[in-house]
Image: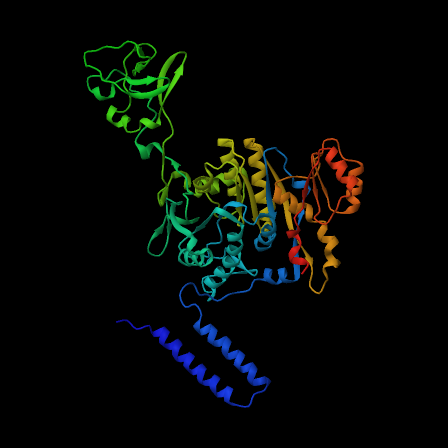
Length: 555
């Protein structure tokens, strides 16, 4: 029988606390004894508290103090606006904790996928905490990383939809702690799948092993199936296009590959037999019942062969299609899908060739370290929203902007209307010179139908100030929140307007632009009966700006 030694020690401590409490309670009572009893109760609560799960030293970041004394707001750099049609996307420059606090106002329960590639905490000088590098000798190296991630993942959970998925890339340095942290934050209502991704086939030599892979945790709500199917490669299904037949008649040595595929009403209904002595100079042979036998015969009437034997092709019948061109049927192999496995290996996941070299081809001499392979991120997103063409993707460790690039590529390939929001700081001008510049150049080079607004996080001092003292300044930043939440652009747009004060409403009602269709109205702006009538007559849709933009300030 095992003995829980930790439980025994806790019980012994509680017993001693009770003895101290009894002694104090028996002594003459005053304010000091009452305070001591309060302290003892707090100590007892800590001792009896959670003892299983992730325990770490919580650290405070400089941004925490900034947010206690300042209110984050968004300001647009209009000179960086990219207007190329398609969906409106957003890039937010600033500390991502402040960005997440703002997104809590506009996107709670609205994000379909969060993909993040946070610092891996390798111990090398590639991650700063409170402006200092965290190296391998830092005794609180892992606690600092967990503190940083904990505060941000709390926001991430709030932002996801009921069926939203978090994808977090990581390597072996924090994989175990990340798993515990995810379980602590998201709880039992989610599944936690760790995907191994071979991203460096050459390997990075460690002391004992050469590391070729990293990981991606998929945090998926339990219940309905959310992860879709993936397109199988030819290597996986051992099939190339069925139409690609051999170069000569092989009836004698490949008899199983010469057979008719029966088509009726443009649908494949079965397979036929062929006698070795029969000769069929026609590609299509029609029957009285309206069906057609399609043979592997070329345009010159020469017998070829189907690439695969009948018994193999029968197994993939559902993936075959009959295509008619100028009245003649041919058989083609469509796309074949299958479930995702927990190990992903694809030459295009190579972070050097399809990450660093790709980024350098877009931004020559770019010094960004360890950009993700475009295809790595693309496939992670496709697993969740490959069939959901209208979705919102957030990356609050945006780095070089690979996530935004992947979203635009996915949209271009299937005509989707997915939107992305990228958040990153501007250390070493990364946001302006790498993230933004990459998105801009990819849009220009590929001709993607995508637009982008560039926002910066600013701060309004609020410590020792009453709401009315900074309310007017706050009002000047509401436009950006409305644009962010609704994926729109007010600047130079005659079809929409924003009205935040009674004075602005008076002016707007007297001179409504002819093309205007929608107005966003401040939640405390009340139109008169005459103004309501004018808006109705003009067919203007009125959207009330939600008061939750301000609710936490007015208490």
